[in-house]
Image (tube, helix red, strand yellow):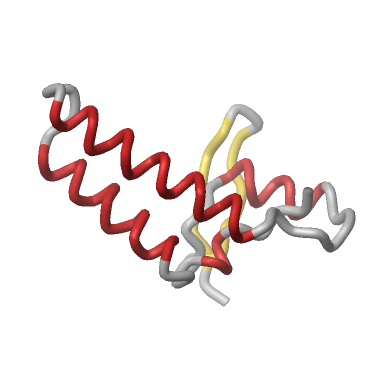
Length: 92
């Protein structure tokens, strides 16, 4: 398996290269292997709807450029389509 090095306030941590999460999620997975209940997908998708709406509003207000807005919209659409479900691994 390939890894990349991510950094946080505790230093370096190895994260699987194919994963989109960062250092804090990786540390949580390694240090708190508790429970099997995951965040309900409906909640994750609801956050994606909110994030997309916030990006569009901030673009309209001139606080977010078009390129960044489009990137956020695209990722939110991928979340809504269920394409990134594996990127939300933490237990609740």
